[in-house]
Length: 307
Ligand code: GDP
Image (cartoon, rainbow, N blue to C red; front, side):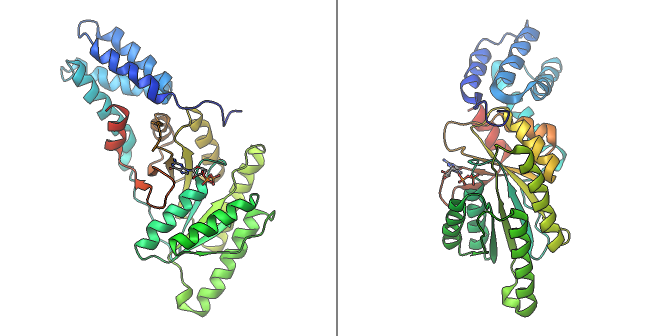
């Protein structure tokens, strides 16, 4: 399946970069650069992004900035940081509405519900009043999981209806919120987090349905969602790019969250997603507990790729 196949090869392949750097010879750098490009492609960066990275290193060699293997390593990291931060991409969430709304999408198992919980916890800790909408109506367990997170995060959770259409559940909850906040200022929330379904066996319908979920948010809260974030499993290979393209077409993403970076995954493919879709990474997930969400930092990410 175009979504599931291919786990990340970033980590094992990047070992080859080390070998290449050790053998780096300035005299025949063109050949070495070609090899480097191959390795980057096989390490999930994809052809277009690998080419860009290598072009930047080649510029460095030509201008005399890159001479040694160590310089290559530095140039490689710098090129990746540059791609990850190009055009002022920032990991800050842009939350302007009151309530602000964030729609969270992604395939089953990517870590959506966990991430919604972690974000609720983070904002709750900062004093925000957070409301969770259980839009994954196809998995009863998703609701229990989210309810557990709401307790942990001190957030309120909306009404769940198993098997109902997700967009209907979202609309109903937002409507109820609006009526409440009209009556009592204490019922005004700062942030609404919308969890969604991610069943894949019907990928096409899923995308249609997610577009309707987004529309349900904008209908109830004009100008919202402030952010539409795609949760990506960091252990996925370059298929991440296919996922991101499809979700982006369906719901117009504003950013990415990369999960499961606490394991062996290095998530090289995300560089390609950022580069080709122009979307910033907002957070990374580094474990299963509430505290295991970190703002994305391009420098540390590049450093982890080439320690
Ligand atoms: P969903 O189907 O996208 O909502 O995915 P879940 O939130 O249910 O997560 C799927 C599994 O991945 C669960 O066992 C989570 O605990 C786990 N998980 C989510 N994020 C992370 C992470 O950053 N690190 C690790 N190690 N596990 C994670």
